[in-house]
Image 1 (cartoon, one colour):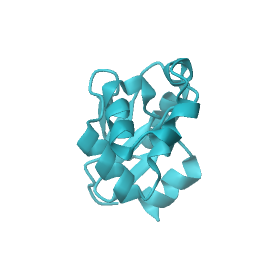
Image 2 (cartoon, one colour):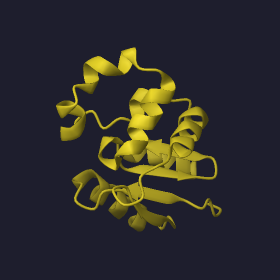
Image 3 (cartoon, one colour):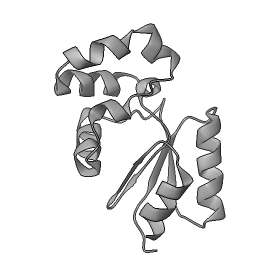
Image 4 (cartoon, one colour):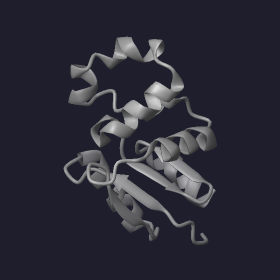
Length: 122
């Protein structure tokens, strides 16, 4: 696998992020860690990743997160414009689904080992 300038965007206390990081290490995948709380993705990054991945913006929301639930976003997202959703995601890293693995030709949201294996080695 060639260099893809991968950024592993994660929250250090997230158990799924820890599993994903272990998976990357075990598979010898080079990456740079980016803490999601301190370096939240920008509107431009999120917009680009959504378009590149072909995933709806809704998939980038951490639907199991406390903040998402406290804000009642399940019922609000459909009434929001794409720009409003992007700005909301960019406002707080804890709203963003994690981990995110992004780089040249790669946008992975959440951790599914089979999906990551296929994207990185397929």
